[in-house]
Image 1: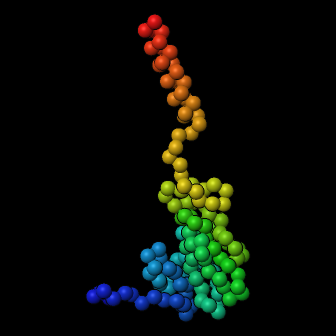
Image 2 (image 1 turned 90 degrees about the vertical axis):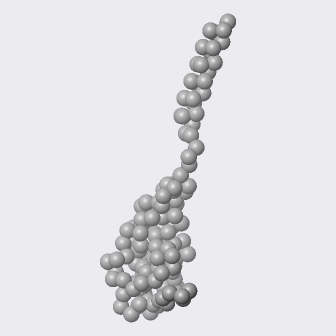
Length: 132
């Protein structure tokens, strides 16, 4: 819809899975369309859901069980029971550390710092030897 109107938002699908994109757009998809960056939650009472691997809020099913993603997770493994998914790949700019996606550091490693320090000492030592 144009003229400043917004698309209708689905809240439940009849026989498919409700998939909510990052921009909030909702669609009803087959279970097979919930893969890689999504996982499924089977809930015939509240409606089946396709949940983003990065959705740390997640959903609560009819049995009051919570299904959650991991913040900044791009790909995950389908969980066999309620809880938090196992992330297998983090979004760009993040790295997997244990069960979490943490910011990828652009800082130099301690090995790189040690190498630079040795080079600086060698250059300074060479200059002192040359000047004296």
